Length: 114
Length: 113
Image (cartoon, helix red, strand yellow):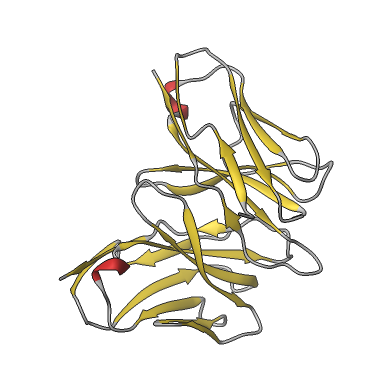
């Protein structure tokens, strides 16, 4: 099925460990996004990529890095995980100009840092 | 900075009732507004997308309206069912087609059989 695929679905890390969250879309969308969702805080933008080859910081970028590997893939890396990064992470994509249709979201990665 | 507010935070209604969820935004220069549904422990499912030039969109029992000048949108759910129980999120995109969505914190809906 066409859509946004995130891996892994669940992950437990120890403080200080690193990991990369993977995201891929097969809809030929230009723009891709990483959000985190925390209770009482809603969804907050971490980083986004408006088009292949570009990335920009969102509201809460500290502690994260991203790579737009190609048009399909946008990864999120935690270099040294902290308990404050315990959250559910969502990747999304959108077609962008000239047809800025709505967003499509992945099913999320539930990350726990102990 | 765009801020999106959703009221109420939680709502409980009996099955069959018609209901309205509210969303307000501070910057009226939006490009589009999107309503999502999120079931517990799941991802977001897009329900309706309203472009800034539109007043409303309908899908089945759902109707979303947009009043840009007042910075408001409503999601109307007709004849609610227990299966409608979920969190409903409103999100807006400003200025250009690539501007990231800004989300409200959602309304948690419970429809009681």
